[in-house]
Amino acid sequence: MRNIHVLAAALLCGPCLMAQAPVFTDTFESGKIDPAKYDQRVTGAATIAVEPADGAHGKYALHIHYPEGARNSYAFVFATHLPDSVRTHMFGRAYMKVSGGLGATHNPLILSGGAGWPASKFYEIGSRGLPGPMPSFMPSFQENKSKTAADGRGEITYHSDGVIPMDKWFLLEWEFNDNPASITLWIDGQKVTTTLPTGEKIDNVKFEWPKASGTVNGLIGGLEEVGFGTRVWGAPTAAIDVWYDDIAVGPARIGPAK
Image (tube, rainbow, N blue to C red; front, side, top):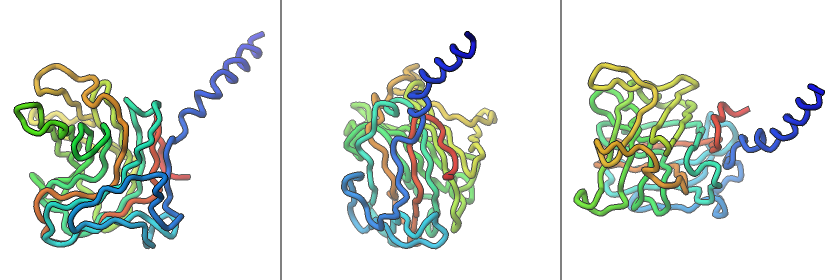
């Protein structure tokens, strides 16, 4: 009888286990940006394309180029057809390579939130050079849907302890949670910590919005899209190249590519 119960449970859990598989993946081995998968959002001098890449998992990878000194530019692809299974809690993976002028500027890289970025609410993995000497990851919550601070626009940012690996491929994993609002990052399988002003080290940064309101659930209201690219607030002192390969998104931690 016990074996029957175990078998029945396994059969019932089959769909649950299947649901934990990634809901979106791309190896870019088609050699092009697939319009059925992505909405391209490009402005200014930045460019984005699928191109041959040394050291990638295959022949091709997604490449964003941001010219030296360029301003008011960005280049992203957004996957906009995400299922309900990742609407409030999303895990992701991307192999990345970053070269060039990441410095003191704020550089958004991976974003997920409401539809219509850049005029949306979203969680962001970006970079920032200050206060340390090398660029570090800057996880944040961004309220860009409102036009001014008076009607709600603003941000909450954290400066991580770990620096961004430069000029080499690395594995970045993330967890975006909208209930309660938080971000966790891993670099090459190791959790990224953040040191708070109190000196406490944490590996899961939390958000409440408006600030000090106590509201920590549903800040986005639905992770409708996820984007990969580069934006620079300011002007880089050298050109920036960011590569993405073997990306995946799902309702549970995905881990390295097999």
